Image 1 (cartoon, rainbow, N blue to C red):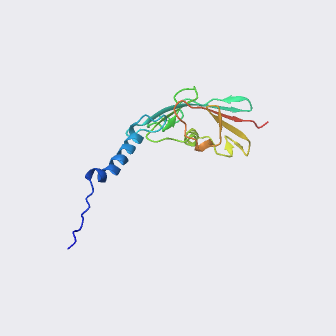
Image 2: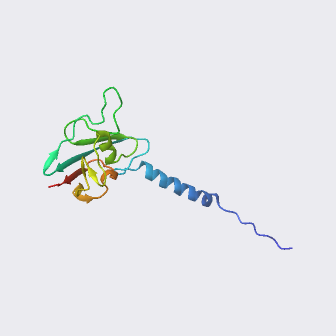
Image 3: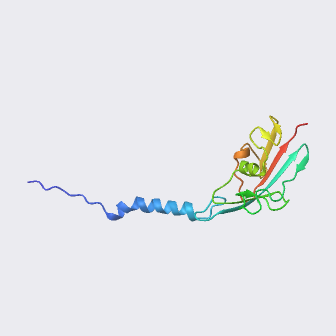
Length: 148
């Protein structure tokens, strides 16, 4: 009669994939992230937005997204300093700020200007994300449009 060998798997080997997965998840959620949302914490980011049309700087009004008697919009301004405040539980696009402001901003249009060539720079680098761009804390965003 032959004796069958019975294989046993060490409990440590069974638990190893789970431990690795939990460690990766914890690192993703709780380590400092440089602009990435940390679990359980709302975003409180500030980005500067400058808009120049035909050489003229367009001011961004104070109080955009701060309706009286109602909660603030996730993206808003407090002062006339061109600082967009993002206070939300998830990142917000630049387009969401323009929607709150009531100004047209798409890949093709800025204010009433459509099908004009305009450029957007984020921290000095050309960006084609336009309304899809998600402003990060400390960003300097410049939008330049020349129609002349």
